[in-house]
Length: 443
Image (cartoon, rainbow, N blue to C red):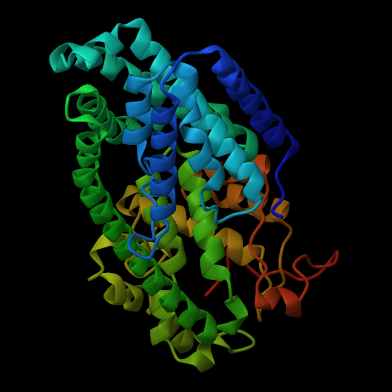
């Protein structure tokens, strides 16, 4: 079982208790229970279908929120909240602990649907649905969708702060903005379901509303499949580099991790964070064009050999420049060995001439190089490496990027994945062990 912090478990327990309080009035309410059962079965079936071979990838904005929101527009708040429970508890979970994640998902949806139903009821939306007055029903439905979105965002930000220790100032950043538009579309479909359900055509007509949603959802899943194929291509390139340069095995993934930490600390949006992770992972892909004997050479390089190795950023840029989805990561591959004072390569760029993505990767690359054991140097302790980066900030490295990495590592620690070279040599050298001759020395 993957470790879950105590405060994350406490947070989930508190949310679960709040969800149970929302369901407590169920025995005393009057509602058509067959509608609750039908909607709950429909939602649970949609959750299972989401992981079928036909689709295979779940929509990030929720599998079938139209069903849940239709319940919020048709039923009293406790009954509407109950619709989400079976599907959430039976849904497929890819990470452990499975039971805790299912309970969290169920509690989150119960609170979100309950809030949406309460807002809809208080604004008179149910009367508009029963009367089929769609224009009037749009206002209460919009408010209910907003309440649903806000509750989910509030709870998601809380779990980020509790489980992943994301700073409070960043935990909720962008959550509502990213989810409001897709949830609003789902809410409109849910409203159409509710209005048709109350019409003379009944539930069968209401279910037809889901057909266009299924088509758009399937198309979205194909996009994610294509994205997964891109990531598989990147992994293949990185594995080829690791095989060729065995002493730095795992280095690319660790640089990607450090680049992501810097980007998040700087408050970049999720899309840029992902691009910079790709930049870190691919920064050394040009080593595929460098002779293996030079990469694996023990001892210092001759000037001619160093000039050959210093061509690897240009080789890497040639390899990835046709991959459109990488965006600014391509510039990072080309310029990650540039230095602020112009002493870097391949073009000797100075200061802000160096692309921001390259300045991020340069710091991440140097940090991992100093904290990893190589054929030509022993690993430095993390604290020593951070001090060295701070000493070289302003000359070699961008001070903003260095400060971001220092803050991120000091707050969350540095937990790189264990790699093959870790098993061969100790990560931290004994006192007095020699280290590389210059800050961030790496090939």
